[in-house]
Image (tube, rainbow, N blue to C red; front, top):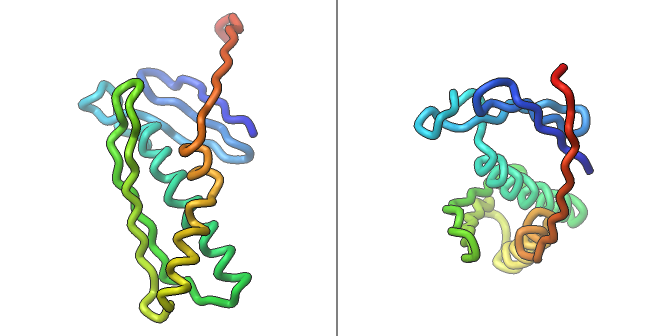
Length: 133
C-alpha cells in the first residue's frame, strides 16, 4: 500500500491513496487554512471506519442486521514515548443480543487499523532530492 503527500502551499497537502486524492490541512489556529481534515483526524477516521467495516462484514456473514451501527472514537495524542489512549464507543442496534454485542466487540478489535495501532512499528527513512517542477 502506498500513499503520497504533495504540498499545495502552506500546510495544505494533496494526499493520493490508490485512486483517491484527499485534501489534508491543519486548522487555522495551527497555521493551516482548515481546507481538509488534519492528519490526526484522518487517523481517527481510519480507526472508526475500519472497526465499523470489520464488524459489518462479520455481521453480514452471520446474517445479522447491523445497518444502524455507529462507531466513535475520542483520543488525545500522547507525548513522545507515552501511550495514546483511544476510547471507542459502539452504537449497536437494540435488537442485538448480549452475545452478539460481545462477539462484535471482539471482532472490531481485530480490524487492521486497530491491530496496527496496538502493535509496535518500525520506521525506515530515506532521502530523495528532487528538482522543482
